[in-house]
Image (spheres, rainbow, N blue to C red):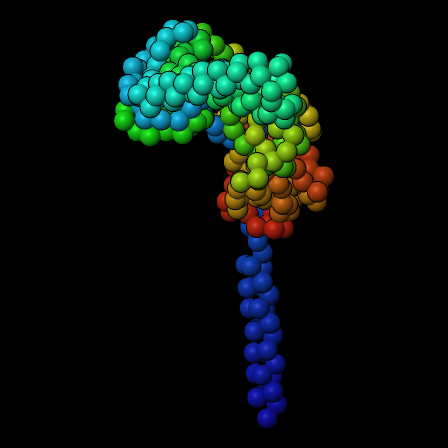
Length: 342
């Protein structure tokens, strides 16, 4: 019996020793990492947007009277001169209206002359005289309107420039004020119009610098914010701004779509970290591993991404960070043991 008890005690001691050995085997091996210091930088946040290129002097031309378009003399992209006739209406109906107005005016003038003579002789009353005068005035107004319509039955160019878009075809019926052409002045400044959210519009000021990039041009073009809308567009809720380009490239074409990067005037301080230090990142945030406990462990800390600048990232963090780990971060987890490699 004593022999059996002794054997049991020896077995328990053996198992305990084995358990201690297994625990020793489970001690976490330190991961080799590299540590780099963090620098604080002052940075003007970039606002990204897009917009359409247009001439700073871009207007829509229309007839001041309605009718049928008889002839269009220019096409899209064609250069135009100041005073050049671009289109005209069919004049038959308008000329008939002028002739009819002339006949009515001449009759009203004869009637007035006769009534005026009779009034001087006290043959007709004052009321009859006044009615004749009112009829003459109305006929004169109708004649002036008809002449106005005749004079403005053509569209002429207000300046030297180019036709960006012809909006109608010949023989179409148009109403007064209906846009017929979109034209822009020659040798004029180019502008980009784009819309910003209420969050972004609060960060920019007149004169803020920007960089403009077109898909079909390799180089970026400098620009400045020249106009800021006082209220949002009721259709899309965006605030419209205008940027005036510094360059006067002759090969630019109205209507081109450009990407826009606006540098805000308000500088803020951010942490600048190597991009390889960032893990588990999305568009707005990510994580870094911060050395602690005399550089023996790595703590996982969340950061807010502000801007990606090539091989570096500007971030904000609620925690005080002076250095981060780089090499080996893919093997780390919160509180991992680390070993600094040379």
